[in-house]
Image (tube, rainbow over all chains, first blue to last red; front, side, top):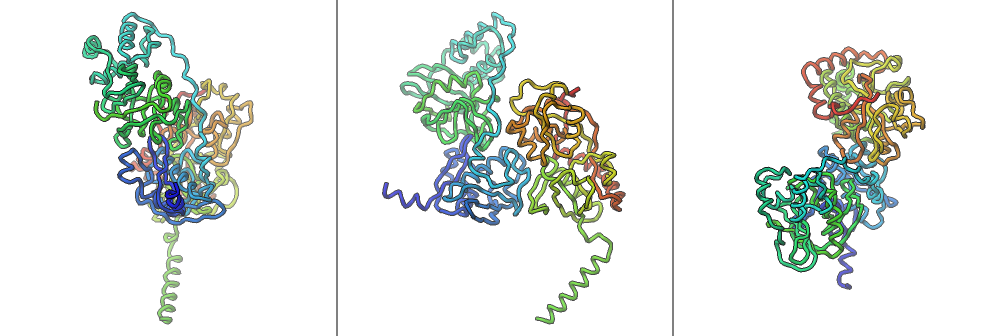
Length: 338
Length: 262
C-alpha cells in the first residue's frame, strides 16, 4: 500500500465508454490540461481490446484551459462537436465532464467551442452554464412505466403446441404458454433459430418446424459448476446454466461491430432494477453489470444481430429472468465462438 | 523602418477608404440568428458574436449572401420577439423560423417565403393518456416559446385551463419537456419533427399537428433596400433546387404519420 501512494498522488482518471457507462482509467498528470490531453488521446490499444472506446474526435484542438474558484473552463475547437448524432455528442460531453471533475478542486466545467458558449450543440444537456458531474448524472427523463397489458388475442391449439415445445426446450418462459401468438413467442422462435443456426426471422417455416421437432434442449458450451451464464457472441444468445443444465436460452443482442462486447470471463459486480445510462441518457431496466459499463439490461429493441454500445440487450419478457438468475458474483463467460 | 511603416499606413488607409467608397459590397452582410433551434441553427456565441454555427438557416444565409456578392457575419439575438418587434435592428437580415404575419409586417419587412410550417405538439415521455384532440390538450401543462405564433395558438385556439409556461429560448423549452416539467410543448412542426429524428429517446411522441399553413420569411428592417435582392435570391435558390437540398440535409419534414388534432 505504501508503495502505491505516490503513484495515486500524480495520477488522474480519464473517462472512456465501456458499454452504456463511462469508466475511469488512470493516467499520469494532476492538472486539467493533462487530463483533457489524455482524454483527447483516447484509450490505449490494450484498453480498446477490453471494450473501452472514446467518442471524443481524435485530434480535437485544446484552445485554452482556465481554472478559477472550482470552475474549469475548457475551450475546444469545433472538431469537438463534429457530427450530428445526439448520442455521440452527449457521450463525449459526459466523458469531458467526468474527466475534468476528477481533477482535485474542480467542481464544474464550463465548456466553450471556439471560445463561444454552446447553444443547442449537445441535445440533451443544458451547457450554457458550468456543468457539474451531478447535473450530468441526473436522469433527464422520468423512468419508463410498465408496458400496457397486451391485447388479449385469439388463442389457438397450434400456437399452444409450439409454445409448449419452445418452453420444454428452454427458449420460452413457461408463463408464456398461453396459446396466443405475439412478440414473446416470436422472440423465443428467434432464440431457437439462432441456436439452430437458421434464418432469424421469428417465423416457423418448414426448416424451423423440422428443426424444432428434432431438437433437444441446448447444453452448456463450456464446463463448470453451479449457476453461471454463457453469452454466445456468434449466435447472439445467453444461456442461463445451472450445473450441467441450460435452464433458459435467451435471445439477446450484444455490441455492434464498432462497439463489440469483449469476450472474456467476468463476474456480476453490480445490479440495479432501474439504472440510468449517463452518456446515452436512457433508462436501463434490470441492469446486471459484468465489467465496467457492460451489462445485461432490458431494452425495447432487441434486433437479431449485434446492435448495442457493448451491452447485452434482453427483451422485456426475459429481462427479469436474467436479473433474478444472476446475483452479484455470478460467473459470466462471453464466448466469441460456440 | 519607420518611413516604411508610415508609407504602409498611408497605403492601408487609402485602400480602406476606397473600399468603403466603392458600393457596399465589401461590407459583410450582418445576419441575425436566434440560437438554438434543432436542425435550423445551433452554434456557439461570445456575447452576440456567433463564432460557430451550423444548420439549415445558417447555410441558407450563406447562399443568400453569395447571391448578393457579400460575405456573412452572424450575430445572435437572444430575445426572439425583438426580431420583429419595434426597435433598433442592428443587422441586415434575420433568419429564425419567423412566420410572416400582418402584425409583424407593420414593424419589419419580410422576404418571400422560404419554408412552410404547421404547429405541432410534442409530449413528454410517459404522458398518459396520449392526447388525441385539441380538447385533450386543455388540462395539460403546456409550454411554448415566448413571442412565437405557437404561444398565440396556445392562448387562443387551445386555451388551456392551466397557465402555460412561456420560455425565452428553445433550449429551455425543450429542457422542460425532457425533464417532464411540461407535459407537452407546442412549437413549429418542422422544429419538432427534426428534434424527434435527431433525439428519439428523450421525448415522448409528437402527438399531433395543428395545421396553420404558416410561412417563414427572412426578416429585414422596415424599408430595407435589400428586400428585392433577397427576394430574388430566395426565388433563384428555390428554382435551382438549393432550398430543397438544404431542407433535405438538415431537416425532417415528413409529417405523414402525425395525426391532425381538431
